[in-house]
Image (cartoon, rainbow, N blue to C red; front, top):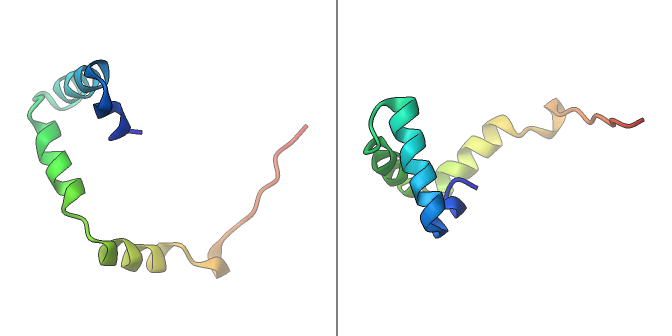
Length: 64
């Protein structure tokens, strides 16, 4: 969702404004984007193996 917002001019403006308001510097967005782009598939696989364990999952059914 965050990256998809960059497809429109309004989305870009929102992301830059949010960075300015929340972090005090709109330029922090560009640092974050570079960090997101530097993540490798292997790193994602390693993290998912560590935290997405079937034996430690829970299923919840919410309804009326």
